[in-house]
Image (cartoon, rainbow, N blue to C red; front, side, top):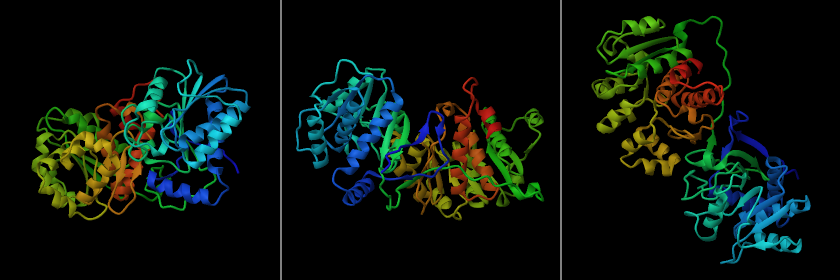
Length: 486
């Protein structure tokens, strides 16, 4: 059986535009038991160890000393199996395993006996020097912050610049949520077994994992996923016999005093994403002739003069508290609606509006909060939102009966009745003011062109992040340039 591993995400984002299944720890344990029952004993662990050893050499082909930090569970057993191969291939293996405090699982115990029989020394402390480290400490079964010998080994890893290869899940990372459980490994690469886990792609996951690889170990995945990794949308060419009315009207309502740029960014993004006509309904009452002279494709209007019942409204970008006066009409009247930034803050200040929002037609509404805005809507802290981003996004989607994009590292797209998606594109270049306005405009543009809110959110998140992943390293990303490139 092949133990080839597939590279899923690298430094420039996803390697393939594939919608991978994401399985929770509970689902994976059931899958592992079913797969193991169909194979000779110890097969899965032997396959895992070989895959880890191969990946380690791929990242550190000239390494002489390999430190394998093992825990007492099956994750440690995978490390023990890797040690056998690396020793056979001529590497100096230094294997650390804390003194047992409990009886190891049967597979891990068998691997330990194989390692001892092969003459591999077992130590309780890390070596004084290593060229590459395999993190096989905790894996999928970790609960709570690392402590004791595992914490000491983890802290030792963090003192070195040598590459770390994480087995299944970096130690200190929650596989379901991506939350760092105290100290956590910063791996050069992570090899996920059987299936990918949600926590590898959101919250602290990407920083902890480095490059993400998948090896299903020859097992099938009949279980329904708990989420999906978001993927690229197929290109849909436009019919030659088209006109601007075929691609929808978008109006950006925002741009209060001092924040006109936010509305302009959303409008520019909607324009470059292909909507038929773009209007700016600026809430700043100043003279903006120079703005529209510079952007002749954007049309100036006011909310009162527009037939929003036939339009897609992107509301809140730079809206300040001035947006409050328009929210009742937007919530009840807009054909399609994207609420961002100050529109979300207005919603949090006026809980009664939530019932109007939840009563809107299915597929017509999207919210795009960052974690603080989500916390205001959920009446909790930002830390609570970030502790379980998947659950937070799903809670908002249920509460308001609409699509929600919880922005951040690994943005979550959730909608009632649908499995959530985690977006794999994007990087820290997007952590500047204005990029959220661009996302809102892009999302509104796709909705205007015929996508449902959920479909538009999935496509917009992927496309928005992909533009950042492809950005030339020698050029600074700005929100204005991003709006023209998406």
